[in-house]
Image (cartoon, rainbow, N blue to C red; front, side, top):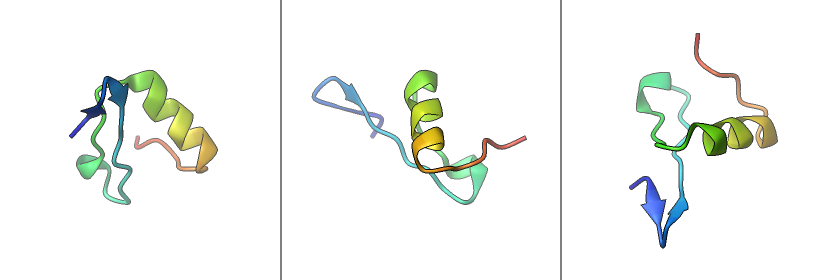
Length: 40
């Protein structure tokens, strides 16, 4: 699932290949809020 009621949702995983989100801006926001580094 990447959207619910038109709003983006995301799964942040400690395994970068398992991260799921189709909204790059939302994903960047969540990484900042939860202090998660983007994969290289």
